[in-house]
Length: 440
Image (cartoon, rainbow, N blue to C red):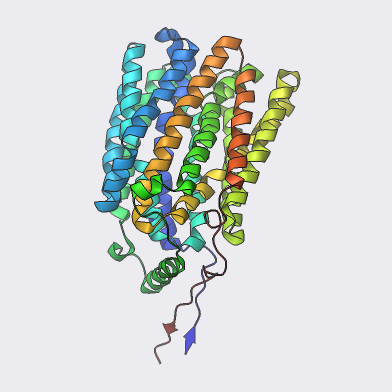
């Protein structure tokens, strides 16, 4: 006798050994790159920095982040993605702890640049691992759970960083404590995570066959796609993805780095209150990521899910900006809804990139997309918004710019070719059937 096995949910073994650890590592990197925003009000006084220099400190991270993305992605593909994650975590943890020792703006800028170098390897390496461990029919949910670490980290950072600074009275303590956390992640990656399914002793024979059949179906359904960096640079789809990611990251980082300032301007709260209120938009973002990722796996249309969620988010950000301090509660509600929608794109975008290239090129192309997009968006966003805040004395103009950039990114997404933005329903089976004997 034989039975059919169908996996409507992500299998528990891969959920805990791969997604949970990838989630935790990205959670830590997002925490350690974004905590600077909570220290800004105190560091500006201590280090005699204006908002433009503070914005530059947030932006210069992405220059370092850009430089090693492509080579580290290629190294992770050829050598070991798992080992790349371990090395990166050790380095960035030490650098964040050293940030608590800075005495002037020059030292801060130097450490933020080096932090970007250290963290640059992680996203390409983790996306490679997830692409190896989840077939296309699971990948939207897997990438959404992975990307969920970004808003969860922001929400936790809002509470944790505000609490550490408030409890100790020293912004330096935040860097010491949060910089030590990556070493926990190093242990988890070293012990539990594996580079490939063939290396995992904890994977059952049944689940291994299910996964291998799913990945084989992906390969059988594949159409010709860029397989090298050179061919990717000649691909209109890849260039379009880079430009889209640039715009969406401009909006994301330009907004998230200055979110505590925006909340503070609206509420005039203390460190505890601003930290707690700032967590609310990121809770909404976590919900948006899960809903968008799950629905995109069922529907198959990746580009629609990116375009519509970013558009709705931009509209609500505009509403929040126009309301402003005249109705604080309504403005905050609109802001929370905005983040819930426009942050929902990230997991679907991570699932879309491996869909647009050959498996051998996932690492290097993800490095290209992530580096150029994040350099432009991550560097330009915080810096431009910081400069606008200085020039105008408020955050209103900066928020209006973010709305425009997000809308342009959403429109470009809708013009992606159909094959690049969709899991083909007729080629990727809804479920892979694995024969299991009953022993008779």
